[in-house]
Length: 148
Length: 203
Figure 1 (cartoon, chains in turn yellow, purple):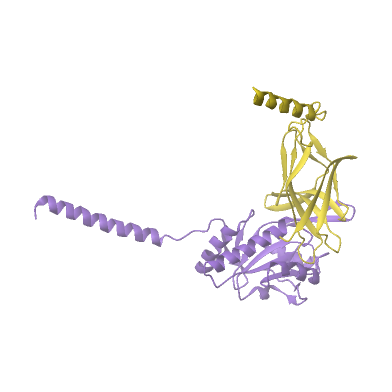
Figure 2 (cartoon, each protein chain N blue to C red; figure 1 turned 30 degrees about the vertical axis):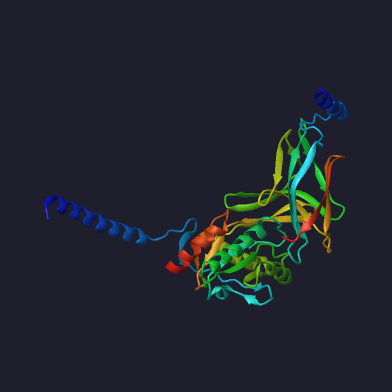
């Protein structure tokens, strides 16, 4: 019986450590509401200061998350853009906001939604990306500019 | 030889002849392009632009090799480098398959206001020494694009920032510098590597 009692004790302690149910309505326990995966910042082409950023954002909460802007202290600007191919014409539009639906993911990828990054003359090796909803900081990540 | 054996031998001979005929028929079947639209060859309009080294570049400068024309701009961080890389990869696939006659990749700027020859030189250097960048006055760019049915238009983003919407097709010019085929977007290196040798050997 001792091993069973021990298991129960560990389970009770873990439950106690996890605290109250997440007030943000997190679907996945112990995860922040917004997380990023597969972040890629290809180095701008030689001589260029414009670059693209790609990643997947996951909403781990039970509420939709509205991203209104992205800021980076190392970059001159970050904008959310979307490339659209329609009727044989390639268009790029600036997105005023991106909504990640509750429990869903949204991909920023080549030829679709992407981050448009304006680099300073000296390309930093690491870049911080801070995702905001209005004044609320949703997510801050640091990623390396790759040599792709 | 009894009649049964004669029948079997006859059937075997007919089957063999049919097989040889069918296989020769299949082998002779022309291989069709997957996506390229082949056109009756047509001349380009006269235009006067500059290459990435600042040298004059007109329609006669397309003569001598096959060319792949893509219309884009250097402030485009997504579609333009992706498309140029597709063309570079297609050239590599063709070279790996043993093709010696490789097309020249030509980026025509639809944003000549920002794309000086110097900026074009830096930009196209990212795509190998066989990639050419041409730019110049807006009027001269329009002379070239209008004749090819290429659309482009400046679109404001915010403040004094802008982008350029543009046709995503890749135009194929033959070694006489005449329009010969069009690849419509979306593009893939495999499709170029498949279709270009067919175009280049049959025309």
